[in-house]
Image (cartoon, rainbow, N blue to C red; front, side, top):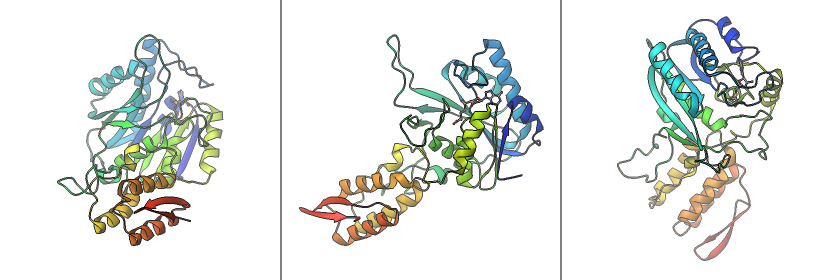
Length: 329
Ligand SMILES: C[S@@+](CC[C@H](N)C(=O)[O-])C[C@H]1O[C@@H](n2cnc3c(N)ncnc32)[C@H](O)[C@@H]1O
């Protein structure tokens, strides 16, 4: 297959044409039945019709997923328990996790609590080896040298990512574009390079963009032709880092008191946690300097300066032991 295949069509039909047991990972973000305008469809079905639609695409996806393969399914609160039940009672899949995507902004309600999360079910198909690459998705520890694993912590199953705001340059026209950082974590955790990822409801192409950058083969299916066009444009753009990051990736540990460990940590942090997030490096460097500026020697600053410049960060003035020092210029 090509590295990226983008199919315009109905997932119910197109999944049937893919080979059996071919996908290592399925990332599915289907309509939530919340009356969104997806042009070709309006995301509004009777309850039983929606359940039936969900069952049909899940059965079609099951044939395509290899034994041991993982499937992530995004779903809103109203329908997620029914999807869960299909996996457990009808498909005999193995439960892996229930992830909460917590977002800080959204519609304000006057009556009742405002919604601030969507959820993601993670199941695997029985009969094969399940991939979970923890080292690829760790987040920085709050404390570096203690009983903690220095390589970083497990990100847990509550994920904080902002929506991609309409004012952001990488916001597409699609009404429910997902943050690339979320899909990045799924793809890194549950597949390896050159594996095959399938997204049956690819929308603006978030999964395709992520797989393009992470060296996975990917097949996307989308019913609405204008979203397919949008995806093609997105895939042809130069890459400057994913459009979103878990804020915890910028966390600077509190106990980097030894200069040697601090210097070693500094470059490790960028390599481990900010790979593919070039645009967040400046924020991390600023946080690092504001936490440790009393302790950092001029020599250490020169090192930080060199690393900063190599990532295109420039022109920062910082206070070093009472003096104003011009950095990265
Ligand atoms: C929640 S959105 C996916 C958004 C996507 N994850 C992104 O980041 O842009 C669901 C998508 O499924 C598409 N869709 C709805 N019914 C479909 C079907 N039967 N087959 C394929 N795509 C469908 C909609 O047009 C919409 O783009």
